[in-house]
Amino acid sequence: MTSEQDWDLVKRVVEALPEGTWTSYGDLAELIGTGPRQVGAYMKDGDVTRAYRVLTAGGTVSEGFRWGDGRSGKDVPDLLREDGVRVSTGGRADRSQRMSVYDLKLLAAELDDAAPEDTEDRE
Image (tube, rainbow, N blue to C red; front, side, top):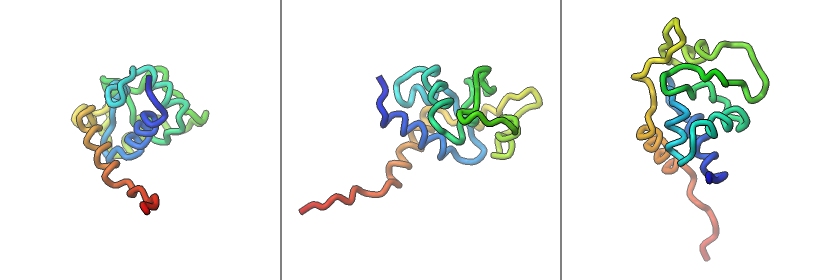
């Protein structure tokens, strides 16, 4: 079972995806040891502002994708393009811009290294 800390990691990683990249539900699921459906549910309900950068393994928007805050407006492919992701006219993101689970693990390690040190008194 995934912990609150695991979901926090998912949120931090998605928010830190470099411009011009995307990832998949499956890659995030593998990162924390859960399933893609659970990641999809979290993207919907977890207040992840860049959830639109999480796609199916084939690089398309999931049929079940919904904005967690109920918003609508810009199309996901348009937002991806604004972020530098190449998206075909058919709505498929360029696979060469996908962040694999390996890339996500490296990004997570960078985020951990950049986190402020524990400032608890050590007397």
